[in-house]
Structures are given as C-alpha cells and as structure tokens.
Length: 391
Image (tube, rainbow, N blue to C red; front, top):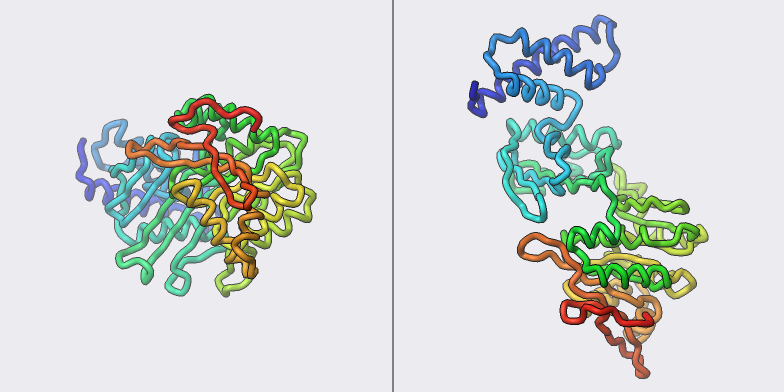
C-alpha cells in the first residue's frame, strides 16, 4: 500500500505514541528503569505494527518498525543516512530540505522532519549526552557523534529561518596513501614522493579550500609515520584515525555554558611540546597556534604536519605569515619568513574539482634564496609528473 508522506508520518506518530505509553507505564509501575535495547525495542514495535489496523506490505512494515525504533533510540530520519557508507556529509537546511554529499556531489534526498520541533529534538538528542546545550543564550554548538562524526548545529536568532544541522561523517575506513591513489586523489608518483618525505622527516603543510579533503590527506600522511616514533596530534574536533602504536591524541575544549573552561588549540600545542613528541600533527591552524607549530618544526620536531585553508601554495605562505602575527608578537616580516623557510619543507595543495572529486593538484618544496626570500619549487604537479630526486 502506498502512503502519502503526511499519512505515513501520522502512522509513525501513532505507533510511537502507543510505544511511549507502554514504556512510560512500565517505568511508573517500577517494572523498568531504562529503555529496552534496540533488538528488544524492535520486537515490541513489530508486535504493535502486526496488531495495527493498517494494511502494510512486508517492506512497508519493516520500514515503519525501523522508523519508530530510530525515533526512540536513534536520530530519527537521519539514521538511514548515517548508516549509508557512501554518504560523507548530511546538511539539514530546514525540516523539509535535507541534502547529502555522495561521491563528492551534493544532492537532495527524500528524508524530512515533521517540523522544526522534531528537528530541534534530534539536535538536543545529539548534544545532551555530551553535557552541552543549545538555546537562545547559546545558539550554536559543535559536537561529535559516538562514531566520531562531526556535528554543527545552529538555531535562531543566528539563523533567519529555523534550526540548521550539518554532520560530517566519520570514515569507517581509514585513509592511507594507497587508498588516496585508489580514489584518484593522488597519482601513484605523488604518493611515493610523499611517503619518502614523511620517512625523511620533512615538515608538511596541506593546503586547500573547504571540503577539499585536507584532513583525509593529513590522515594518510600520518599513517606513513614509522611506528617507533612518538606522535602527538592536536585537533579542534578529533577526526584523525592514525592507528599508530605510539600516538597520543589531544582535543581542544570549547567554553561551557557559563563561558568558562575553554582549552584552545594553542594551549594544547604548547603542552604537546612538553610530552616528548617526535612529531606533532595539528589538525588545522587558524590563528596564533601557527607560531607555536612553526616553533616546534624549527626546534627538533622535524616531520611535523598541519593543514590550513588556502587556494594555492603561495597563498598558504601568506596565510601562515598572517597567523604568526596573530600570535601577538611584533616580529618583522623578514624574521617570519626566515622562520617559515626553516620550518616548512613541503606544501601539498589540494582542491575540489567541479565534478566533486578531491585531488592533490601540486606538491611544492620551499627553497630559501641567499637574500632570504622563499621560493617554491614544484616537484609533483599536472605538468611535472616525475618527483624530484634528493628531496
């Protein structure tokens, strides 16, 4: 039997109400203190669906059971999207407009929420277990799902419409250089060259625009680090999956609802230096922590890595200069450039093509002239496929 979307939602609401009444009665009667597990809950809902006076096909009945279970113990309409490994990003613009990114392309999907209250309920379900809240006094929040997927939610008055939810899914298969070759992000010669750079402890900056795959490439580079080295990672929101035997992961902490308790990236980078690292990986530099990162690269922590937002290797250097100045030190530009030339050896430029594919478009090495100027020498680029030797 085919149901209109509204009729389907009403049927789902009715079954959810029946289940809620049963569970509440059991809790009030002392028969239960918490929710049944997912399988027990599924059996309950299957019984309710079988007894309900609606004519359903077997597939519709199973879909209805799944929808009700997801509402009780999951994230409702988002659960099928979270379960699909081909989907990398979920973007909820409003209850009726949900978009996904699949294979690098953004497309609308057939998922919707009943109304804004339903969407707010799902957002609250995400942030509440983390001790966070989202309301008019704190209308935006960054959070993480149990599987590591990164969540951003923002509500009025910061949005002109209703709540907006964005989820960047956590990859179940860690990124390696070989996998990036298979995905056509890297050419085989590029992967070989970058593996050699990591092995020879050259410090690397991965540069690119939003959504260009910088973190995936950083993850692949990190997994190429020899297992005997001590590795400290510092991230705003933990995403790296390095699987390294001597790896300590640090994550920044946002302020609490009273505006206190924040531990920024910069504090963690400074602390990492006291933890006897061989290398430090900073997920992304955005401000004054760039100074501390460059200091680390210049003081015995060769082979460290980070990412930043920039549209070209030249822009990446300009951004690094600007971020060093944000650290609050009155350094002359010439001194900053000397620091850069001594700290960074390789810049990997990554871009997202119009067809949605994420590719490394160039790999350049920094060269310092006798006059102290920084030059960029391409070693792997579309017009220069063979890596330079002796890197």
